[in-house]
View (cartoon, rainbow over the protein chains, first blue to last red):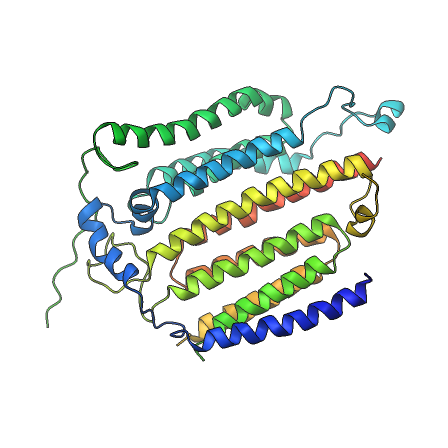
Length: 220
Length: 114
Length: 80
């Protein structure tokens, strides 16, 4: 099938899809008129029930914790898949043949890149730690904090310090930590089962609601 | 015009699909897949929006302020994570395909013997 | 009703998606997809979703360009 044939089929199918989509859109309540009950219910009961003011994180870890478990396993499987697909087979060479023949060395990273990346490692770690530990109060959470913390390691790699990077995050250690993380999430849920509640229910005592100064009552 | 966000969703989806169909480089195709996935985020957040409402974080606002839907935001968050993971896996496959067949062109990859 | 800010950002997002698809060279597309991620993050803020904004920012500006550039570097090294 040639390119232009493919384009024509796409235009015809796209027209059909657009017709059905617009037909479905007409029955929707329109942008901004939110009818459904779930959002309002959860907004009303989340803070009294979980004592957390970040309702999205409360939904992620309390009301829909099983979905978060699935998402954790998606990440775990993707990491395992990448490690498996890109594994080093025994008959492959590490450096390319042309590089070996001409005795070329790896060029050093430029000074500007090294300086900027090394300067930003400290603030990145601080921001990542802050984001990961404040999921219950403000827009942050484990995923965002985790990626920012991983960026700190990547900055070490980008600064040209490959040997330091390999020492900071050896492959065996990261594999083990990933497995322990995924497994302990499932194990925490089973601990809830052991005490008689449903899977992944919160069995620890609730803390106190975080909050800034309570705004004064509006005077009419 | 209160269905404009959904029209943008349909446009982004169609443009991404067009890019996937007429692409000549595997990495370009993967980035067009990212564009297609991003249309679903806009759709999810557009469905949960309420006019005049604020973000559902009651840290310093009184508890009964009208807020947007937090459930679709949790779904969109999961969506973003899944996009990153799928992209990583697809790029690993692209690297392996290049190593085995020497080309990253979808047209030529189709005609190779197994 | 969509406010003026939301309409503007939505038009920019549609334009950004078109630009990402029409950029055929993969190395240039990395820059395109970074800017598209930034536009999406602003759109999510306009839709009152700061958590999704943070995730999209970190994924679109850090993780995705890194993955894409590493893939392109590895492919180019294999071609030699």
